[in-house]
Length: 253
Length: 243
Image 1 (tube, rainbow over the protein chains, first blue to last red):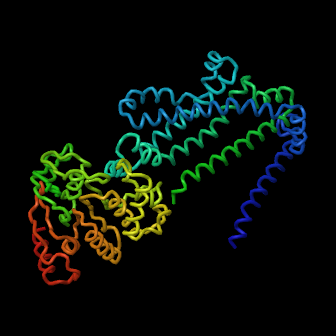
Image 2 (tube, chains in turn blue, red):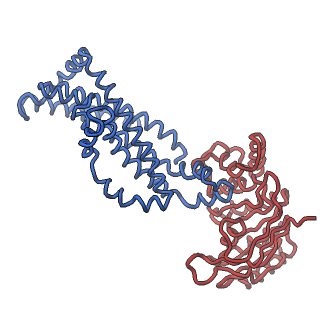
């Protein structure tokens, strides 16, 4: 019975995918959108082959990864550091909380104008925009995680000679806040992809720019190829991160 | 010969913002190897006394005089009521937690941890996570962590209050065995009079607002293994009267 249940879920998942493709094909055949803007789902494989043959897909992925990794890295490190400071220093918390309240609601893409002005259309500009979204996610996750560490563990640390800043941070604060910190990092991994494509649509080399160029000549099949490439890369990165997260938090029930 | 006891002198503690101290004028000594039970009702400040003695909070008045610190040991060690095992450390790492900064080599630490885990019968739980063990086993690990630092004074804050009656009885026997073997002083806080009388050589009752010690007597025939001993029964009634 349990075995049947285990098989049922993926089978239903595949059925859902097939239904979606059928719906897509119907939309293509009956022109539910302006003619030519919905590609034939059965032509996507050919579009993929064409993008590979023209040496566009892999270089575009490589270009995107450059600013993705930089933006994600810088945003994560700064978000973690500032979040940690906000949760551990009352003075810093008081000095920055109003500023954070003003800046937080500004969407990362609103910074594109300044990114272009300061960094021109470059990897650095795209990384800058990506890092802003990632920064806030990690900032809030780290600050909340550190604040939520059970204060009784700090008393334990003091009672057993681990009350100094470094020992306390290493044995209580960081491991105690780790579930929240890792959850923030994982959200940041996804958030970075969303901002990345939007930033690239403005001209920074990468998959977003290729999508824009393909759409410009009506090659919507190629657009879908890049969309699926993003989905695959995101799934791989999220899967890897989830493995790391499971290992780091293996102590949880 | 230097004095190896702890001396609590005119100890007073007032919580920040409170009008009156929770306790005041506490005066008593704990001789080397002595087992004292401190009994009192809920909220009377028993645990706060322990925290003052452990140096976890600074007293509002008076002082705690501790003997000269031994090498590779801590003067006091705390056994918490809620076990407080760090969930992200395996049991062995939890037991080792207090050994940092004592100048021990890695081999010394390993030897010490092995020794106390054997003593508390948790050697086979070394690689488990805290959520994988029972309440009684967690209390043993809590005790092992405290014993590992070889304290002169073991401070125990109602350590058996959250376990079932059978486990509690077994843990009490084990604690007595360990205390006799290691010859360290114990200050044991409890609200259970029978537990206090059965375990300790001396029972103190703390009561009032601010609380003071209103009863401080040696248990007659301390060390008896018969819980129904008539002398203990009579003493128990006198402690209850003081409470």
